[in-house]
Length: 138
Length: 138
DNA sequence: CACCGTTGTAACCATTGTAGTTACTTCGAA
DNA sequence: TTCGAAGTAACTACAATGGTTACAACGGTG
Image (spheres, chains in turn brown, red, orange, purple):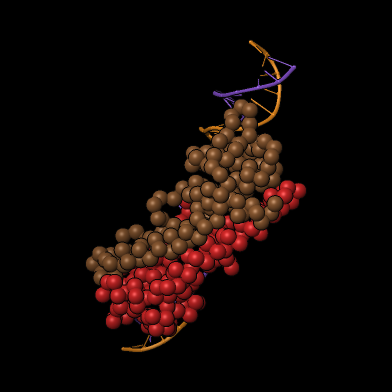
């Protein structure tokens, strides 16, 4: 199956680095810790910036958190990098046959359940913030 | 973002059809209700068969449930068609730098949270069975 | 001002998962 | 034996992903 993109884990890695590190976190430095290409880091940091989670200093370099460590949850990070409409984690097949009672009615029923399941996952992500996560490895 | 495959919604559609319908459900008939190619249906039904959810009669045609309607949950269906290892809904980026304290320790901490989030979603799916779903459109 | 490291992007590529299609074989009852 | 159905292999088109190169824009420092 297609997994949820590693953008999420990389984003959490980036934010953890910024939160923990005292030195200036440049894209290249972060790329070294994540072990990937600096452009990947810049792309993801751009998303985090757009989401209002970090401030990035162009030219001089370096980034800092715009919220307190315990005000940034994994759900915030997830939402910042997994650009996903509304409640669309699950894909629903297109246009079931309206002539069939099942085809006509299953979409509403199943979509509701999908939304609940997605919500359950997201609420679990919302329970953990950067502080709690960082506490496990400082 | 890449969504969870429509195999899941199609599989639920298929099972609902079999559960509700009195007539023989052939692949072509189901394909008509789902509104897709019969081969897609056969592929997914093969997964459902392998998971022990349905019995398919080759040659003569038609399928039937191998469990009671209220013994088949959405999680069972999900597991049958989303061939996903263990608890790997989330992808974790490869080999963070072990030289860095964050890179060295974030994987275990984050993987644990990912697993919890995935589990929360799956437990929600486990709460709904085919009977409950079908009750919404019979 | 010129330099230089950093950020911000655009463009491109290889890989992979998905959905669909055609074509063919195998099955099993009439 | 026939015929409709299941089972599958092979192929295509498309999109997301992760990575790479290249280059422009930024902003302190000498």
